[in-house]
Length: 299
Image 1 (cartoon, rainbow, N blue to C red):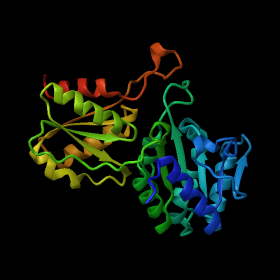
Image 2: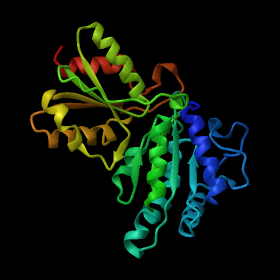
Image 3: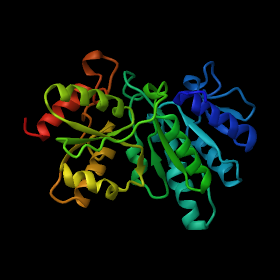
Image 4: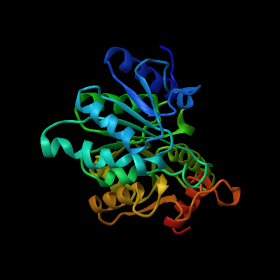
């Protein structure tokens, strides 16, 4: 069987949906050469929206209501501050209020080293509001799981994507070494940095488990009770902001379900991101994860 990368998997899923399901894909600049990092096929059901922001999101909600199951692409997650209101105030609540579904598959892309309005990760904002599923897949299998979950019901899905993961071809399994010193719960692209951090920690004589988190909402903390009972120390690391972010929420959930555990969170610092190398404020790399682990372990 041919091994596909995450990028190729997204392209394949999208093309099948547009062709076989009469699906539709909408977004700004989605038909440019390369098709959003090579993830969008050349297809008549790809609709390139003008720079209308909120109006474009309303179009997607309308398509969802009439059964087209739209894919809505936002090339930079920062733009969800403008595009988000139709999804938050309408698509996510319409079923509960009016018993009419509006399932939209929101692809929200992110990356480092852009400016202050093109480099942020906002999946925690959509975890806050009811009516959404939120996930951050980085492998082909995880993306298929997210898509199948979306197609199996009528709940809007917020998919947090990171461009640096588009080349991933392998699948990852959680480490379950009960003799480890600490658990690293990693989200999105930080999972790749956590794997590197594990190697660096091993050179210091510290054993770390890397636990891969794809589903942010719903998040079922109870599934990690067994390993936390054995290893009460942990760090949740993500590419979004630390304050009121996904890592903070998940760390709280894990400690609530496992009293006596000590689980910290690690994300972006509380300063802006810029294109100046001195102020990148990039996602936590392996060295920052190592430092946080040492702090939690008191070493």
